[in-house]
Length: 209
Image (cartoon, rainbow, N blue to C red):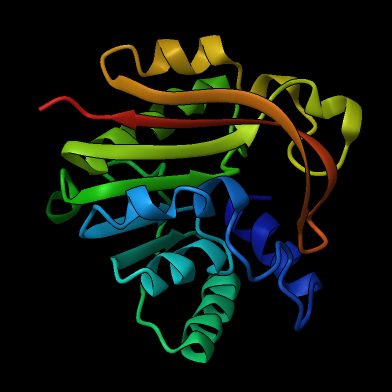
């Protein structure tokens, strides 16, 4: 199955519930003041909209990119309920030629929350897309799982090669200013998809220029 089919099935199976809840990711939410320094943001692999809708509530102009039409429909309902506007776009961020020219170097914040659905062979491409979206002086905020997460089994991929370490992120963003890179454990409750003790890593990196 392709990524669209895989994720659409997961979001459909959740029914009226939101697979990862409707509240923002905690690592993202705890940086509320810094995020408000920007004018706009884009949330990639945005899912059912919990993070993009929250960013819009901060007053940012927000775009949400998601491959699953099922997820986007649920995200639109969430945005309407919260009375905010988000520009939801159905797209495969890994498709050749993406992002389009008008989205390149266009965003103050590029947010990737638990986007570890690809292995190392696609991770470089995934990070390159995020870098292309970021304007000079803009930032990427990334939240993911470390290999220790395989011991907890409370969410995330089952393939160790998909998970992040500090070394992986430092190498991938060697030409950026890494403002924050923390590896930690926390108990999270994000819908039925992420529940329990978790091995996490968070990064904020600034594009030179």
